[in-house]
Amino acid sequence: MEENEQIRFWRGEFGQHYMGRNAPDPERLRALTRFWGRILRRVEGAPPERILEVGSNVGNNLRALRQVCGAELFALEPNQGARERLASDGVVDSEHIMNGHAGAIEMDDGAVDLAFTSGVMIHIHPDHLGQACREIHRVTRRYVACIEYFSVEPEQIRYRGHENVLFKRDFGGFWMDQHPDLQLIDYGFAWKRVTGLDNVTWWLFEKRS
Ligand SMILES: C[S@@+](CC[C@H](N)C(=O)[O-])C[C@H]1O[C@@H](n2cnc3c(N)ncnc32)[C@H](O)[C@@H]1O
Image 1 (cartoon, protein in one colour):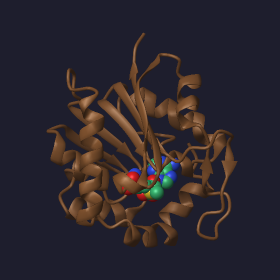
Image 2: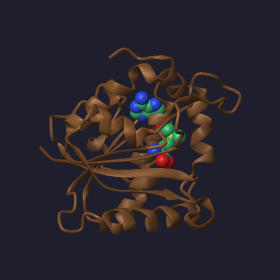
Image 3: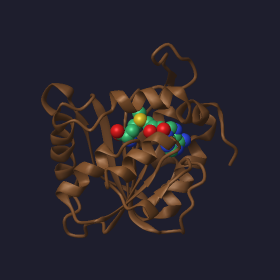
């Protein structure tokens, strides 16, 4: 799939600056470790052994996942600086770090047990969202998790002075409408006031035929 305006935005200068704001500081990692501990409790009967984060940036989620499970971790990230930081910090083995984007994931069908996005679907243009979901759905054997900003109606939001790079919607509904084989395991809201996370809504699905 062709690179589009939104992906170029993240590969470029904006993506470099974002890395600075998204540093893996201890407080953020503690909050994410608590969060992922809660999510993985929903699947403790059959925990994922291979996990892919699509749009990992410097790997804050993956660092937290390391604390709460022994799964093999994979990262897909279009921004080069973020990939370098992931590798130099040893968050993910270098051969498990992929340059690319959600619309064309270079992995086999069912290559991982859980594939997830966190703050990434919001940056995919609505015209490309269906393809991104198809790819994520294709590469996961079992679970899909989605952690994003929610809006009942699809809307475009101005993001740090930029237009056309942030889109909110009911991503859980989008997933279920596009892929009816997905069964909802659980969903929730990570309220900033108590979790330290950014008022995000999350969904956890399992593929069932
Ligand atoms: C807001 S950051 C979230 C980073 C990380 N998931 C987290 O929760 O800390 C969005 C990340 O997604 C990446 N990204 C943007 N568009 C993408 C796409 N179409 N496919 C995969 N990653 C993308 C960006 O480079 C950036 O690292």
